[in-house]
Image 1 (cartoon, rainbow, N blue to C red):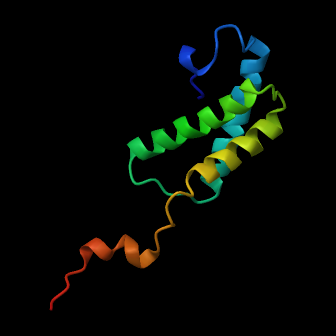
Image 2: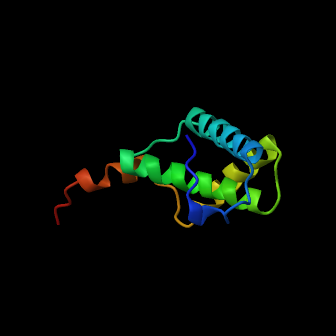
Length: 103
């Protein structure tokens, strides 16, 4: 469920019908993200991703977007762009900490 706190939106900006659209866009975006096979290392990381995705959708809605599909697509795009700061880990890097190097 999408949680919108007061500091995420200026009071009165989102009407009840707008909130329904935001929630539907978030739910669809989250389903798509889960279907993509994304892995989370912990419940904390999972919640952080949900928070980031919701903030991306809220930012788009603050700009006036009210189309569920565009909010969903743009939210996912912004979320993915926000994760590009680090190169993806390879499978060998996932197990690198398990290796012992003897010199």
